[in-house]
Image (cartoon, rainbow, N blue to C red; front, side, top):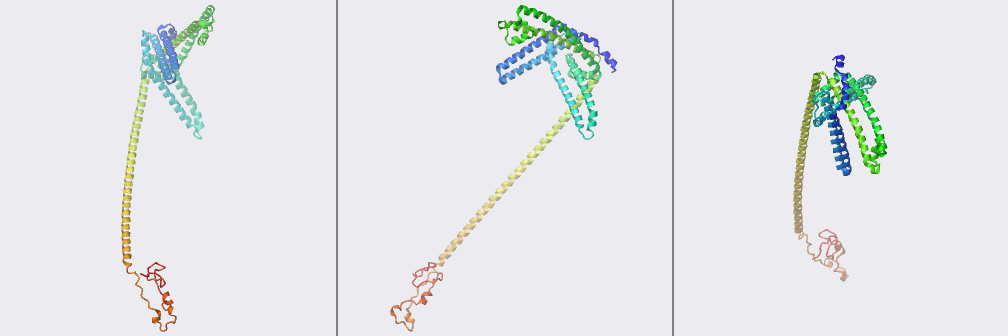
Length: 459
């Protein structure tokens, strides 16, 4: 689309309608009541959390804070929906319907912020990979010199599109009732074809909001100072003196018996400035809706929607491929684990069989050894019995022969000695030649037993 066509379709004159937000009492009441209820929830949650203490108090305080946050987001979206009805000049819906519609907008906002996070992570990943390549020796400095400006320009364009187009335009697109994909396609179409005019519109809107804010606070602050001075002179300094100082006085228990005046003055101050902030918020939201209507007037989002659908289909295809690969990898891992388990079981079974065979062989060898030992013992017993029987049979044959009666020496001596008393004494030669029939050891003629083996010589 030519730039002139883009600028022609973006109407800067509509921004003057942003001041209409000051006159819309329904969104003003809804926003103010939302802030009041959320503040009361936070105070109650803090009080209950401090009273209970421990984990219970912490959980209760966290839940109360979460409910207050959801209520504030729903209330802000409800205000935007009511102002969108006004910007499109259609009959406004009721505050309860706007609050419920704002509550259903929260999931879409969360999904969009998730998309923004993915985009930022992808941008950071691309930059990290590029700068990692700059560490290549030799060509690294030249690569950094060429790559760094490109990455800076790309990051500036992406961040500008997110901050000036993405977030500000996606929100009113959801308030208008568009689906998530349709709103995202619209944001992409504006970023691709009308980025510069849209940024110029938001800059003009900020100028308009600042001027209206100067008018509102320029009228409010003098009136607040004038009436606060009169109240201080009539009631006393403990009530309204110092404006926000009344809050500090209330928190510190200042005023003694006039504590009710201190509390009333503090709440009145909060009410005044809360209304002023609510008015400025309505002007800003009304202006955002007007910028959205101007930026999207006559915009063809079919190309962006087709590109988005193609991108989403590609992401889904890659996700399915990754899921299929993950499934195959899981199946392969399970099959491998099953094979490893079966191999382990088979090895364990083989080891058990080997151990059983070794135990059986050891038992058989032990039995054979025991049988051999018993046979050897029986054989030794038989040999011992045979030896004892042989010894018993040999003992009668070894009994000494009865002694031969010795004849006197004088019977054989042709010349007997004249010494008659000694004729009955054994000759020395005969006494010396006597031996034991058992061990052949020399014994005396008169010995009854052998001195060497103890054999009995005489019966």
